[in-house]
Image (cartoon, rainbow, N blue to C red; front, top):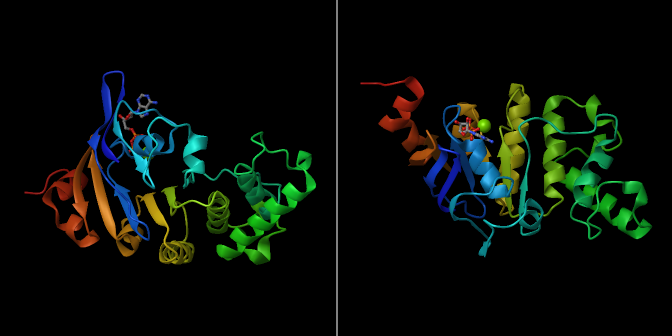
Length: 246
Ligand code: ADP
Ligand code: MG
């Protein structure tokens, strides 16, 4: 994305922000509350139309496209809060995600699908559930899983759209130590398969152990970019986080 600006009335939530995510790379986006991280996600995924700037995905301009069109071009996202249908099985939850990629365009009444289409969706969902390592829990109600595994279900759902770029909003929030490790292992595996991953995350240990590069935002602007080691030494970053270190 190139010089993306997003204004809400007089407030500049993103000011000429440029960044790119390579295939097979994890880029972390960090910054204090109100820095503009979620707004940037919303601009990329098409939820919030940007005011100025350009965004390309796999060589195609996406800054004026609908969220649906952008998803079809290879972008998937998860949300900050788990959005699963608790009483439905893991398989059904993930199949709903796959359904959004199906040709029919209408919303998720899996029951109203044509049989071959339904079978195709369930097979794709099962494949993505195996990819995140939850094959033993396919039939379990989503709500019966621990939070760490529910996050994995959401990622499996996002993977059904066959993305080349995955946006994750605070995937480690609320997870226990071992759950974070399992999540990090999964993200490393996806990276090794060539996926680009852009994540907003507050857990610094998690970010610094995982990200290839880090972009730091403050007051809507990019104030630093580099390897985890570089940004942790950057005086502007220290100032943003610690409120001024002389
Ligand atoms: P972050 O995710 O980094 O905490 P946000 O992107 O949520 O930051 O917010 C950046 C700024 O934009 C904040 O000042 C916030 O109040 C403002 N903002 C975000 N969304 C809206 C909106 N829909 N309308 C008006 N202001 C908004
Ligand atoms: Mg936010």
